[in-house]
Image (cartoon, rainbow, N blue to C red; front, side, top):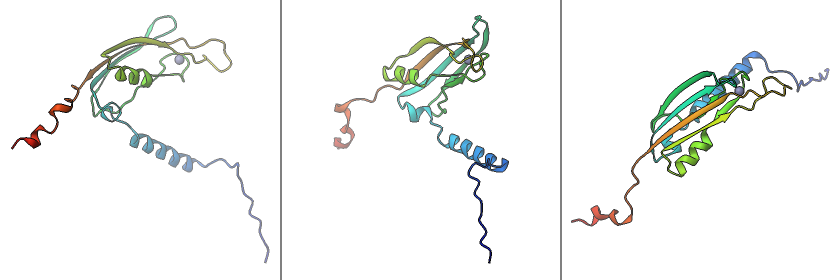
Amino acid sequence: MANYFRRRRPHASPNKNEEKVRRELAQKNLARSAVTLAGQYPGVAKLSLDVKFLSAQSLILDQKTLNFLPQSACRFVFPCAGRCGKGAFDLKVIISEAVNARKNLVENSQRCRERVYAGSDETCGCEMQYKIGIAYFPKPAAGPLQGTAKTTP
Ligand SMILES: [Zn+2]
């Protein structure tokens, strides 16, 4: 009997169906890992976000206001509205720092540093101005009040 040698094709590209399945799986994983505001910042009652995108020439490209409640999914990454087509503004760290410091209002801006096209010296320059408003739940009452219900006859 002939001993057929089966050639392996380690560099074969995945077929379209495999790619589709993988994409769907990735989307499911993304949905499952969506973190709510309450999960991420249990002390926050409401978070509002005003963002405005300005082109390098200071023209308004886009602006929006988003309100997050405890059950809202935390999505604090915004694609750049400028000409680079691939930049993103990530406010996660800024929001985490603001919450840790229990700030009620943070205003600032960031500029996109993506190149306009690969190899170009010119950067996108799109600016995102943001205003983050944060409302907190009252802090739980401390020590002395705990356990009083149990000791009352
Ligand atoms: Zn950009």
